[in-house]
Length: 218
Image 1 (cartoon, rainbow, N blue to C red):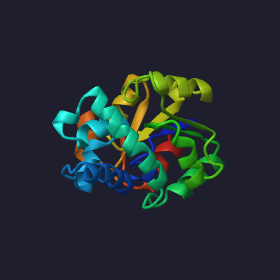
Image 2: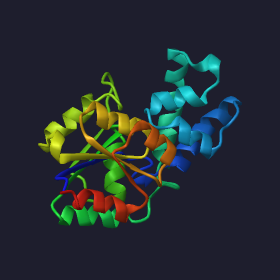
Image 3: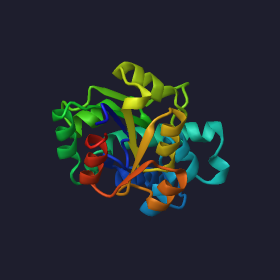
Image 4: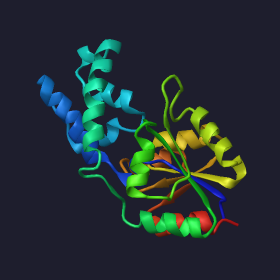
């Protein structure tokens, strides 16, 4: 059994893509810019809000001043609407409960702004997560391992007893950079090909398969 499991949030525990897409397209519509499809946003997310903004705005707005303005518009709207369509993936609440019952220490590491992460987790998974880390100003985000190591230190976790679970190449890279074993989930924003190409140690098609990876470890 892995004693510690660190989960990505968007695309792994929660299907947040529709609310993210709606907020970004709201900004686009206000400026008269072209909007984007949900499938396009699945490729835009994963590297934090600043990168998301950089990817959905026109080229001439991809300046520090332009992106700052876009984020000042995007963040309050997203914060107000972040629960309109977002929901846990099937089986996730039960999985988290079973892991805690088995004595697994679980946590979340997200590239979403840290100011948003605790309230989102408490809203969808009340009382479940003791440890959670989102993006902080001035510190690098995933796949850089800085915040991962900070979270692991808080958890008392070591490399050999920790599994990192996510849905994208960013998550698999994060695990590699932190010296962790990785499991890619196939229900998220990306897919098997990306996770296999990045070298995920395990792949899970559903939460039962993920539970087996975590609990059946020799």
